[in-house]
Image: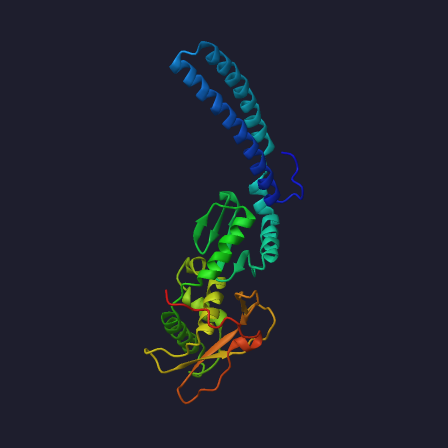
Length: 286
């Protein structure tokens, strides 16, 4: 393949798209001559028929050569490109240029509210567990931007109930007070205790759901009078700190929670550590 102007997948696809458009013009010219052949044969116009046959043969040879050139011109090794990390960097750069917040975390690309995983061996992406084979960076970023405009499908009530139950199990296991602060990484471990569940519900997905719950403002549910209390994070990344991304591209971090009794209403939202969202709560009923 002729090297793309800047070595990116986007540029390579753009060049192939342009060459394909030129080849289509050759195909259109051939089609026109073949229609003249058909018309000449139908009417018995012998001279016009022979002229059209000669022209069609010439154009067919030109089209075959153009198709060979088109094929030879596109041998971009997308699997190697995806596996090398270059594709992820290109997606990040494309998102930044489009002012779509995205960052990389533990082999995932986080782009509110979506989580993106690159699958080099399948020449595909996984966006929120759905396979996506459209890989052109500008197309992928447009898809993610559309998902942002639609908003997340998230039900805060059942998630909060599951969070409270898991938190109570951690408290009981560690012999802590009922309203003690527990690490969210330990809560996630309880939620994914069965074999394979850690792959089915990743830390990145858990962090995103924590953020959506935080933005919903929900602290209690009808199933319990105990109230969620966010423990202020350290503001730095670490083994026990979970990170996600907001619509505006900020990176909130979560470290611990507790569930206090109705008489213990004091507590802070972790949004205080990174600033509140201008667009308000992110959660939606879905």
